[in-house]
Length: 293
Image (cartoon, rainbow, N blue to C red; front, side, top):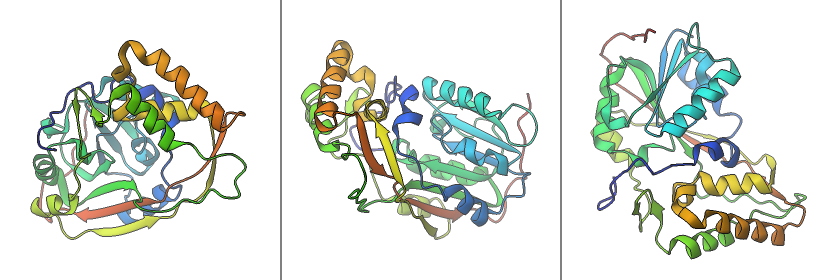
């Protein structure tokens, strides 16, 4: 992780109820792409490391016999369990979901071996060298590591859509007025942001050169005022707890800002493209296990 910054359990405190509503979705072709590239036969196991509220775990569950979501945040695991129950992804039968609250650094933690290990916008929060090496050893022969993120650097033109753009720059400025100029992250700050260079980390852990896929986005979205407020609170840099006693004042000012931009409370956006890297793991290893209980 970034030098000088130490992870603590308040990183996403209070963000879980806002995460699923506030975050922009992955491109809709992501699940079909992974089904095609990974070709699961319905009998394997998926490990989602840093699963959050099950954003990717649950849409992929039907492709596997068992999916295991791991996340250190209590609220995220509770939200994932709630969403799994609502979706009918139960604890028995094909596609069952198991949720484990713990840091990735504690793996393998007796979870067994897996056909696919997934990181969806989570790897940068971990001790990456340690986690990459551990996950490699948890993959069964021919297994794959999948790294998913929004496509960086793309331009999403909203001209022609019916509502104003979300004023992301103004929101960032308001957050800075309340929380200071340095990017907050838990009890610490990340002046330079989160680290990159994942390719070198995975290569050092013994993974093969990646297969890269881009799932196009661009679909029109309508976002309402509550969606944008939830987007703000879903970020580690503006999680609700960071505002302390000033939370109500911040939200009131945020909503005034949004209404000044769009008196109807409606905003236009487009679905981001999604970038996928698939890295094949070891050719030898342990057979897949299944958690019981």
